[in-house]
Image (cartoon, rainbow, N blue to C red):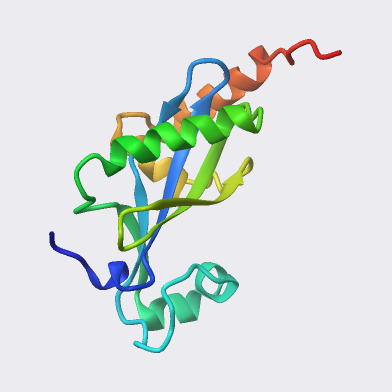
Length: 154
């Protein structure tokens, strides 16, 4: 198996968009790439990595569709994301932040019920990969919100 620098001993930083209320769709697994990160710095999406544009440029932080995932891992990740989404009673859309350990284990770091929906950002980019334009994505999210009915709870 070919591993990139982003899959060193610390593992890989992955993201998956989930959309739907009852019927869920997951978008392709997205990955944060650390191209020029110093060896002594862990490849973890810290606050500086996420929000400091100058630092992102300096160390080559990029995101893209995950490549070279071990066989069956992408399907496993999609199942996990849907289970977490349902277990947390999420609706509309969310993004799951995950960590893929070098031994192949998948860890859910966070379920983000309000990820960045800006044009060109990860959620919208991953939707576009499966043929959902930005405009159609936003309309679909609005429609899901308008049609949502909370389940009856006692």
